[in-house]
Structure formats: C-alpha cells, structure tokens
Image (cartoon, rainbow, N blue to C red; front, side, top):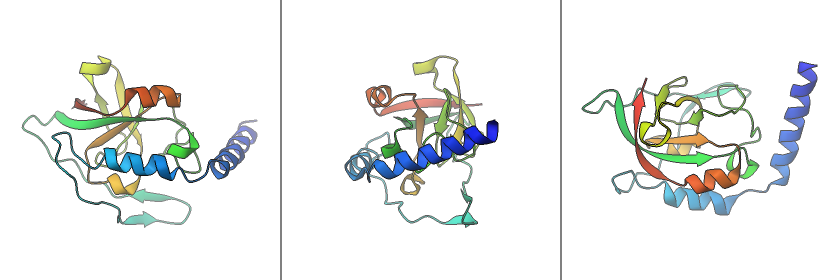
Length: 167
C-alpha cells in the first residue's frame, strides 16, 4: 500500500507541476524581494552554482555559516513558501532531503541539512529543521524559508528580518 501511495503522489505532483506553468512573474518578484540582505544592502547575483551528484540525485555543497559575535544567533531574512507548484520544483510535497513537507520544515542554502533553529521573537520555542533547499540563485544569502500548509498563510507571512537561534 505504501509504494502505491508514493507512486500516486509522484504522478499527481508531476501532473500538477506541468499544469502550473512557469510562475515567472512570481519568480521575478521573489528575486527582487530577496536581492537585499536584512540590513538593506544589495546582494550579488548567485545564479551560477556548482552541483555534485548524479542525474537522479543532486546535492548542493553547503559550508558552515560564518559565525557572528554570538555563535548561536544569526540575523537573517525569514520568508515563507507552500507546496504550490509555482513555488517549488516538480515534487512540491517532497523536500530536498527526501522527507515530506510538514509543520516545522524550513529551506535554506547557507545552513547544512538537519540544522535545527528557533525564531523566539515570532514562534517562541517552536523548533524548525532545515530539510529543504531554495533556488540556487539564493545560495550566498542568509535566508530561511519556512514551509506553510497553504499559500495564503505563506503570503501573509511575507519577508521579515529575524534573529534565529541555532540549536
């Protein structure tokens, strides 16, 4: 039964992705929003990234983030995404680490997979875990993208400068 459900999920995701179009307007708007850091400085173009791996599985090489004066806290941009096919790749419910999306999942390119963090000023003691990646063009930017169950909540969240606590 589990394999059959996985196959149905993959086929459904592929069909939805092919029907959704390119989402280029959303993509260009996101590029404009995310082209500055939390202090308002313009960031460099990061559209050319190196990948390793095979055709079936690619993993981005990620280095440890630079430590701030307090090694456990970082000021970053927080954004939000949902499983809307216009905001994801061809597998909108599957993270880059191979898990299904759920509450507490986040994407970031500057933190290693499995990194746990909190955003106390917004979510109290709730723990998030990096299990997904953003588009390669955001690789050298300190952005955490938090998964929301629906697009309306993700859009309402918007973009905020926050302090995260690494666990």
